Image (cartoon, rainbow, N blue to C red; front, side, top):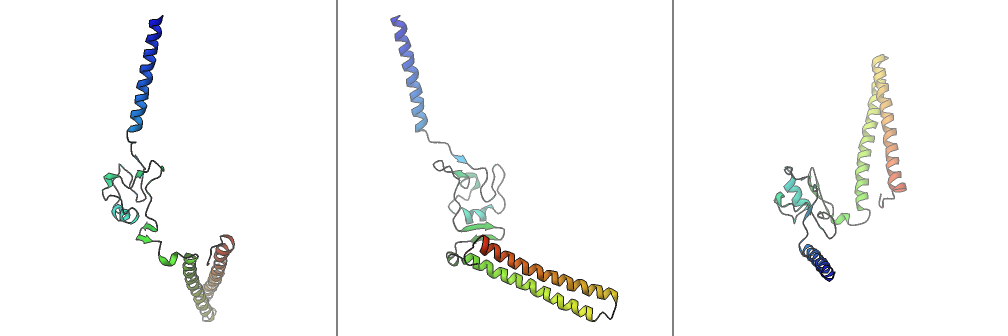
Amino acid sequence: MKKFFILLIFWLSFFSFTSFATVLAQTNTPAPSRFAACDLCGYCPPDTPPSTWESCRKCIYPLASSDPASKDTLRIDLSTNTGPTPHQGRQYTIIGCIQTDLASFQQEGAAASVVQILLNVIFSVIGGIAFLYLIYGSFIILTSQAEPERLNYGKRLVYGAIVGLIFTLSSVFVVNFLATGILKIPGF
């Protein structure tokens, strides 16, 4: 019976030591790298990178390797479990690399004021075109000389211009109401 207990203790100590050594070996080995499925430039291995990948990589991931096979733009940081952080203040679009961290946009409400200027220009141009169509339709009506076809054409131009002006004015009102009243965008 003593031999049986000694043999049992020997086997238990042997297996617990080997499992402890396995745990130690696993903690000392470096963790394998993990990769995201796709990067922000559209590279999704095993597919080849898109033709714009290099210019996008220079814009968004300036510190990454220019070789797509290195997968620097896909490597996940195991400590934070996040992918590579793109360069702050840059966005790659179809027209190229756009910097969004310009000095004028650092102030609060600067972007809203730029958008407000653009909207004012757009709505002014649309309103001007509608007013010109109103004048043109009125001219067609005045010079129709009781011709039913030209008279109807002039009326359609006038009605379309009035509807366009109403649509433009109401869209200006809606955009301003949403930006200032609901979204409370500063500087709008």
